[in-house]
Length: 262
Image (cartoon, rainbow, N blue to C red; front, side):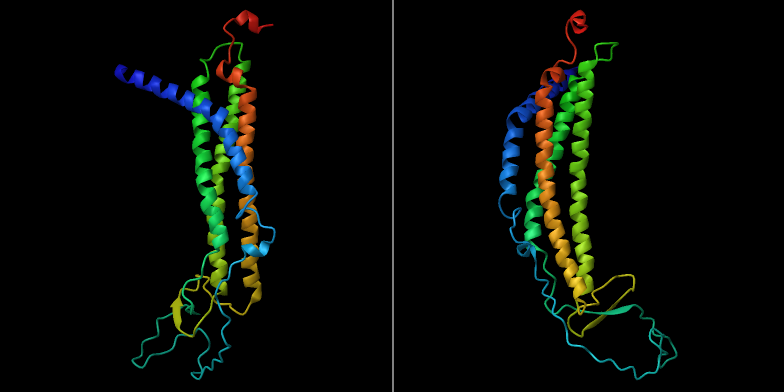
């Protein structure tokens, strides 16, 4: 085991060097970069109509359906051989234009911001390890610097947790939009059968569903813009907090305990 100790110490030294360079040099660069992103497309839209996306789902002609069998809706019919028709579920229609396109503007924002979220999580983890390595052994008294280290660690953990939660927001948007679009899309009279618990494309004539998709896209645009602002704010907050307390973070205890009392 002893032969691995030099490698562990080397790793700790590397973490300390990388973390200090990160705070002093890269954090300011990150903040300026995010400010520029917020001032240009796709994160800046003077008119929200640029965020809208054509679903390419036409409103079909109304179809008159006459039931000549005399059976109540949903009742299983007897087959000629005496067996019952086992096909159940809601009838839906196939989209004539194929798949419904995603919102390209929102997707461009997502493709830009996801690597930045990953970067923030990784760099927060690096800072967390750096400060953890700087915490001295537990002793009585003279722990003011240690409390600063622990408070900084708490802030870093909060940033790391919030950054990871941004991914949930993105996945929820796509899932919600897919469910809404499935209620809008109807096309030809080609019918398929699925279980009724699938909320399938069934209401192309209801404009409220189409409008809801538009509102959802606009909401996600604003949400992603706020997310980018929050990432920038996290970098700015950590940079400010760490630089102001750098001396206590690196040397939490005075070498002379008597001097620390005054």
